[in-house]
Each structure stands twice: as structure tokens, then as C-alpha cells.
Amino acid sequence: MLSYFTPVLSYYKLSKTVEDDPKFDANRARRKLRRYVESHDHAIRLKAEIMVDHFHEQVVAPGKIGGKARAMVVTSGVERAIQYFHAISDYLVARKSPYRAIVAFSGEHDYGGTKVTEASLNGFASSRIASEIQSDPYRFLICADKFQTGYDEPLLHTMYVDKVLTGIKAVQTLSRLNRAHPQKHDVFVLDFMNDADSIQLAFGDYYRTTILSEESDPDKLHDLKAALDGSQIYSDTKRDALVELYLSGAQRDRLDPILDACVAAYRTQLDEEGQVEFKGKAKAFTRMYSFLAQILPYNNAEWERLSIFLNFLIPKLPAPVEEDLSKGILEAIDMESYRVEKQEVIRFMLPDEDAEIGPIPSSGTGRRPEPELDLLSNILKTFNDQFGNIPWSDGDRIYQKIIGEIPARVAADTAYQNAMKNPDKQNARIEHDKALGRVVIEMMKDDTELFKFFTDNDSFNRWMRDTVFSLTYQEPEYQQAP
Image (cartoon, rainbow, N blue to C red):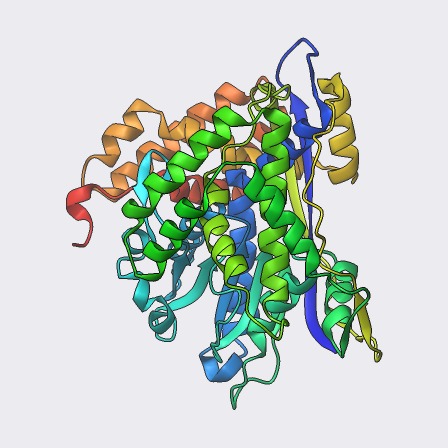
């Protein structure tokens, strides 16, 4: 049985910000809109608050694992993980929590115009992440494709999921919670992206004996290898040279010249259709070989060398150039409202029978669908019907403005900016409240409901002033602790 799984539903309402009604590629536009709303600062902050509040009230307060419980936040990528790291860290400070967060991702990434790494954000080396999370003040481990498999931490009690999980990936990720501890009596999953049915289906396939429905034919690897070799994008000499360098521990700068020469051949020798076919077959080969290598009773050195080589080459292969007919859609819309609703805790009863899964697909060809142009108004209507089909209230819209629009306008106030440069935080608060009043008055014409809340409701007024101040005030640099 899978216990204490709680889905959290997200609702969005988007609106046009342009007078005309341009056409965009509907399929691409919908994918961009979904990424936009899920990575919107307002949405990330609200979900971060839910995670932090839940952890304090439902995990720390009841003393889970003897008061030593940790939480993992599973995100869909590096940029999202860094967003969550900042949002959770800021809210922990605003909440006056004694706890802190750690972020885990690979490599160096540009974020807000600055190159960042795990070490630069966490303040310690990447090699110390697994040990640091075991001691206070660290309680949140925010991950982007790290620590989701093969990570054994008995203190991990709660998982917050903001990433689509399917099949074996769902089982591997959620199973991080299953490591035993003498004081661990339950675990908890709060999921912002997956519904209960999909998670139950994923676990059902691997709960008991798993049977392959059809044989995965190793001969198909011969066919894929022959097609890839015949493309003349690489030679046996280049492939074997890279593998030898890799196995001898050579640095990446010695591998890249070989790969770059292959990428150049890929660009010049293959047309658009050929590039799509080569990349598809390369992915199919690595996917199928990875599976068969675990069950084959013998080794094939040729396949192993090609698999190593392709795993380095595939990420460097550029996507075929094509016109983006959804370009500009994000500049033509805005998120008007956003709401999250936690559902009831669900306990799954898993099927008491063997599961059957299909063979690893060996097809490597692909074809891009033709773009389907549609009006912006129709695209937004379809999106709002799918993700925002609920009765919206003024409260949803007003909360969005308080978290998103108003702090930016207050932070731009010259008097408030000057006050923040001085060491007197009390004076900065006074100037902040004056700036906030000016902003609300400016907005009165367009949002009388917000103005009414601000002027007539004392508790709302105090909450709004505290919230916007926490989002805009920054200590002068010479006041901050070294």
C-alpha cells in the first residue's frame, strides 16, 4: 500500500495584453504557456510557502523521525530548482524558521545573468551535500535530476514533487522515502504535478513480478549500429579514440575536439530529415543498449564503445533549425490569477498480481508535426478551460497582484530606494508604507476592489504591508553578517 500521497491541483488564468489577435502555432504555444505558468515567480513562491508551512506544521511539529525528519523537493530542471532554492530560502527567513535549504544540480548554469553552481549557492562543496543534509540547520534538499535514484537517506521523510513522473522513474523517485529508520513510522508525498491514478499505475507495474510482454530483440541493435555507422558522421577511429580517452580519465577538453568534428559533419553532410533520423536512431541505440546490457549473458565490446561515444555525442547535436511560429506569445499574455488547492490524502492499494510491461522501443525515426496556427484568443481559451476551469474570485486576482505586481512597483519608488541605503530599518519601513500607499492610489482607477480592501480592512492592510515589505526590503551590504 502507498500511504499519505496528497495531490495538489494548480489553476491558472491567462489574459491577453495586446489589442490585436495574432496567430501562433497552437501546439508549441500551449507548451510555452504551461512552462510559463509553472515557472512564474508567483506560482513558485506560493508553492514554496505551501511546502515550508506543511513541513513545519505536519512534519516538524509532530516530531517525525524523532524531530530529525528531512524533506526533498523534486523539480523538473536546473532553473526550476534554483528558483525553488531562492523562494524556499527567502520564505524560511520570513517565517523566522531555524532551518535552511540545500540545492543539488550538475554543472554551471546562468541564472539572472550570473553563473551559479551548487557550491556558490550552498556555500560549501558539492561533495558535502549528502552529509550536510543530515545535520541542522539543513532540512530541505532541492533536486534537479540528482539524488532521485540510488540515494539512501533514512532521515528523508517527506517529498514535494513538482515534476512529471512516469513509469520506473516514478517508482525510483518516490522510493527514496523507503529507507528504514527506527523512528520512521510513516512518510508523506505532496505532489503538484501528478495525479493519483498515474502514480498508482506506475507503482502497479513494478509492485510484484514484472514480466516483459515481448522479447527485446538484440538483433535490432545490429541494425541501428549499421545505420549509424553508415551515416559517416563518425569513424571507428574517432569513436575508439574518444572511448580510450574517456576510460583513461582524460579531461573533457580532450574529448570535445573529437565530438566537435562529428557535430560539424552532422551539420554539413545531413539534411534536416537526415539529422532527425540520425539523432532518433542514436537515442534508440543508447536506450535499448542500456536496457539489454543489464540482462545479456555476454558482453559486446563494439556496442559498449558505441554506447559510450553516443552518450557524449547526442547532447552536442543541435536540433534542426526551424521557424518558431509561437515566438512572441509570452510577450502578448499575462497571468491574471493563480490558485493551488491541496486534495485529500490518498492511500493506494496496489494490485496483487504480476505486471506486464512492453519491450524497449527500438524505432529511431521521427517526424515533426506540421504547425497548426490558431488565434491567440482561442489558444488562451483552450488553455484556461483546461487549467483554470474553476470559479475565480477577486481574492485570487488580488493575491496575484500583491505577490507579483505591487512589490516591483514599490521597489522602484525613489524615496524607498534611498531609505534602504541607510542603516535605519525603521525609517525604511516608514518610507515603504508611504510608497505602498502611493502605488495603491495609482492602481485605484483600474482595481477599486483592491483599494477598498486596503483602505477598509485593517487586518488586510497590515498583512499587505508586511508581505510587500518582506518581498522588497534588503539590508544594506555593510549591515549584513560576514
